[in-house]
Every structure is written in structure tokens, then in C-alpha cells.
Image 1 (cartoon, helix red, strand yellow):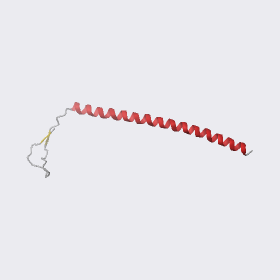
Image 2: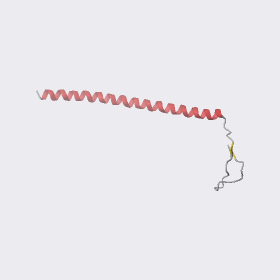
Image 3: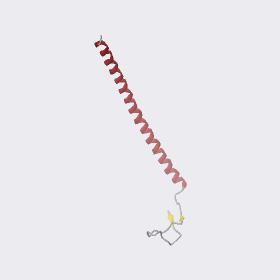
Image 4: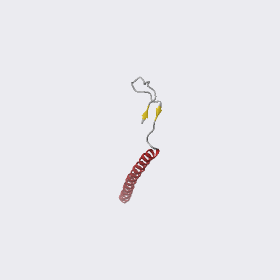
Amino acid sequence: MFSTSSGRNNGNGQPYSTIRDYSDSESDVDDGEDDFIQREIRQQRLMMKQQDEGLEMLGQSAERLSKISMGIHEELGNQNK
């Protein structure tokens, strides 16, 4: 992928890379980017679905709690008469 045109090294025994040959075609890179984007979109949709399910459960719990609290309120009102 990378080729060097200089015999010098960077002190770690690795040659300096002065000329880079990007042998991957742009369509391969685009396909990889498209795959990444599609994976991210699927992951975000899954997360949103899970959040929606959690919010639905939370809403149901709040509704039950409201009914219970109204029942307690009525019971206390009856006891204070």
C-alpha cells in the first residue's frame, strides 16, 4: 500500500514514507464507508427501538402509579370523613 522512495529511516529502523501509493480504489473505500454508515444507521434504529420500548414501559408504570395514588387519595379521603 505504501511505498518509499528514500533509503533514510525514522530512527526506529522504519523507512520514511515520502511517496504514498493508495492502491485501494475509491469505490472500495466508498463501499466500506457505505457499509459503516449502514451499520451505524441500523445500530441507531435498534437503540431508538429499545428506548421506545423502555419509554413505553415507563409510561405504563407511571399510569399504574397514578391509579394507585388516586386510590390511596380516595381511601384517605373516606377515612377522614
